[in-house]
Length: 604
Image 1 (cartoon, helix red, strand yellow):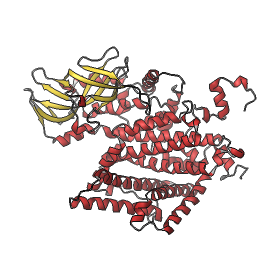
Image 2 (tube, rainbow, N blue to C red):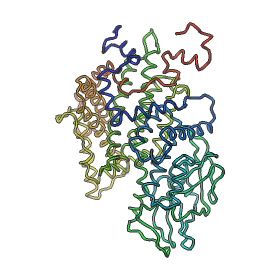
Image 3 (cartoon, one colour):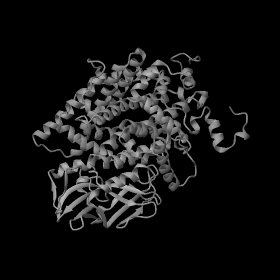
């Protein structure tokens, strides 16, 4: 065993966090995580760390929720006092979402105030006085915004939503109705009394008995003092596998909202006689309504990965302290190292892909809408898998409310469901990929001559997509259409993640950092190949010899990257957090929580 702090020695890994300055290799690797706007991210992270969101054992469910809203007010005040200004700065929102995921997890669920609430009104609104009045209340957090787009019988199938907004031309108002139990709005966070909520509601517009499609409306659901007339709100039981939120169900019974509540984006309207006009098809109207979900998906995707990186960092540091049988540190167990390396490969690859998706969303790239949908399930599934691995390594410590990993996991669960359940999104994206020109989804890896493991992911994607398109051309049916579409999604997403991480190496000049990135790409690709070995074997591409090559290549890179975990830990740039097991001594961390330091004064 290495006993001195050499660059590749295990004791060096254990001392890395206390090093006052980052090494060049870590800095270069960190650029793959941070993407653009590193200074802004550092500034926002510093602000978020001043907010008091430490785990508080024994705090009630309602107090947890209320604390999140209090943190939202403190955040807006700390950033200048204008929610509208924050919502207009996508780079700032990225920094806020990622920082809150790490440093203020109770704040994260209410951040949709900015993008799903304010951004939707700003981009779809028409400047009506009612809209501006709502924006003023949202701006200084007198009210909190969000989106209501889920119904009991229709889920997030936006084309099938049942709540209706009936146009009343004589008074130039709409009345909202919930015509059936299936149309009850479910899950929006509007259940906590004392917090005003002004939400964007997706509802079916009815004009003179005609169905004019689903449109967004801005609705004041409750003030700080009372629920609005014409709507009944009932808090739902607390969730157990998601973050604390004031989920509620609500239904309408003739609630009246003004003409200006319709967010038509200047694409529709009523003339002086109350006649409705719109040149958009119902499908185009659907896209107008659903477009607000895109920013939420890429923002929450990055947040999920940020929370997973934090959990991974806590786990690394805890493993470096925790002795196991025979006095061997948990971090020196080969199984622990392999798990941490595997997690790092997935985190780096999906973070690179998320950064790409965010950049294209901000630039309004032609493929942005597809990437918005593609990245959310990929990122949140990866985050949950990483955090599950962290819990497996940390044992009981990993599920303690004092150690944050559980907090991170619950938020990952929430993100996997928010803005469309992952399974449905994967199938929807897979169907879209089978029809569209995907040339805009190809990236330039670091080397034109791809290693065989990387090339195999390219070949798998091309084969699966070609088969799907052939079925579409011949109108052939499959007994499992969603499964077939999901295979297209998975093959495309995993190839893109490998490409995204490989392409990041083109901006790196430090040889050791390039080698580490290449090894991370290799582990990511090889693990995907191994997981889909049946598919490759059925096509004659996974012989016994190839299986041996995969195992040998993985084993070699697990060992190489285990020696660079110190660099990877520095690269994710997660400072010590207020978790017992993330203290300099996790034993003292627990003594402080128990208020027992005086009982064991000699503990170091």
